[in-house]
Each structure stands twice: as structure tokens, then as C-alpha cells.
Length: 242
Image: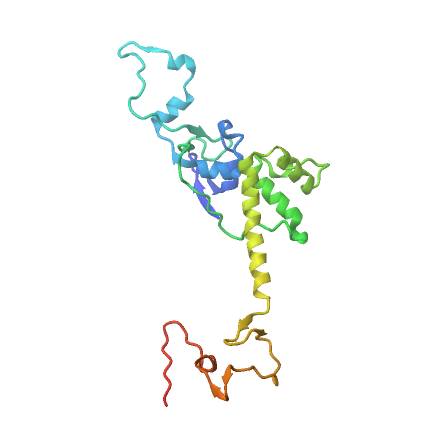
């Protein structure tokens, strides 16, 4: 938890939840992910504050000394979006919209999203996806209707979601699919091929079961000798004294 002071000298809790819920109307259709990836917070300077709070009549007025107002030359400024007035930093902070070709990526801190395949957490999964990708201002009322289950609300959202949003949902689940596949692979019995033998022998052998060594007229072959020696570890030399 981080504390900050507003323009009136009052302490308040800094919260990204409040930043998103009290975002300006120009960003009302942005979901949580797009809001934090495509915008960033900055201090408001006096000139931009006057410009943002000016009226069309003020913009068209003529200064008796300088004539009509002149627009700034050079590269146009990125769009500035003020928070709603109920935000503690309404008069001191705003959001700047990044260029559409920016390369900023999201960084989710903490526990990863739940898996859809986990029956014990399915409702939490649906709620997580909706809170991430469906625009809201009040988590209690905007994610689903009172007469809906979380699964029904999620299915309704997916029916009208954009291809990009559906790809995000698929990519989040892909992590769990890879993890499950790796766990299944780890529990498979490991089989090794003995040099000179056509049969695959499992490493799960009984204590009294012999492993056939490649033999030739009662003598060890090179393959058999290599099989009987300890395997080399990468970067470690094996020394054998005769």
C-alpha cells in the first residue's frame, strides 16, 4: 500500500484500481489491460491544464495585443485524458495516450491467472478474464448481471469479443496447457536403448533382474565396455586407473 497527498494536503491510498475506475470518459471503453499498456500517468503543467479546461469560446477569442491564438509548431502532443473529478489527483495528474505503434508490454506481478480446467477455480477464472478484458467502473455491478452466473457472463462476453481479446484468453490458457503437458511427460517411464540390443529396456528394473551386456565370444566388446563404465557428466573428466 502506498500513500500520497492530493492538492488539498489530504492523504489518500494510491491504487491502480481507482486509477482505472476513475479514468476519463475518453478512455471509458478501454479495458484494464489496454488502459495500463496504452497510457501512462504524468504531472499536469499549468499550460496544459488551462488548455484542457478552456471552452470553445475561449479558444476562438482574439487577444487584443497578440491577435488570434496560434497553435504550437512541431510534433503534435499525445492525447491527454484527465481523471474524473472524484479522483484524488484530478488536478495534478492525467493519463497520456501512447503512440499507436508503441512496444510497451504488460507485466503482471504476483500469482498467474487460474486455469479454466481447474473445476475448483472456474468461477474465479471467469471473473478474472472479465475484469481484465471487459471495461468496468464498478467490479460488483459491471462484470455480470445479477441473474447471470460467471460462466454465462464470460460466454456472453466471448460471443462479441474482438479477435485480439480472444487471442489473449487463448494465450493465458496456453501457459497451463504447456505446464500440464510437461507434468505428464515427467511421469512417463524413461526407456533406454542398450547398445547392441534390439529391445528397449526400462530403467524400472527389479533388483534381481540382470541387464544383458553386449558380448562377443565371452569377451567384452567396446560397446559393452562403454555401457559398463560410468557416464560422463558435461564438463567433468572421467579418470580410470589400470
